[in-house]
Length: 217
Image (cartoon, rainbow, N blue to C red):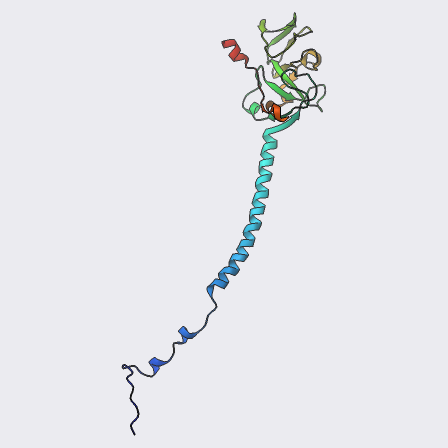
């Protein structure tokens, strides 16, 4: 009896053996990727929290370095500013240039450095300020003030030295200012009133009087 013959296509027995590499089972690569993603995903969340906290701290530091908050107390700046208004004060402005006439500034008065006052700049360093007949004269020239409701009810004369300013409240009959406690050193100035943010109906940029433009007109 003859052994059945099969056509092997010319292949040997070894060629019919299964490929060990092909038949070996391996763990899917996705499992490792998922594990790594979870690990790094957790680290990313923590990193985002830390970065957000750091950014918040930096912004807070910048805001407190360049600005200040101030509450108006009393009526000394009527009719321009009112009691209980809240303002943002710019400290940066006077890093660039000194205060100008007409600026509304926040400062610590030399006679009471623990308090913050808000007044308007009237006299600049080196000038002669005189108050007479209800009006202000600077170096002999009449100072036209359109922002006050009443005339100035007192008189006097002051000579300003280097880095000294003469400040007055807009409500001349009810204000503690340079006419009563003297000249203001520049080093006592905190900044320039910039924005009123409370109450909501008063929200807006604080208006300053530009005397240079008034002179040109």
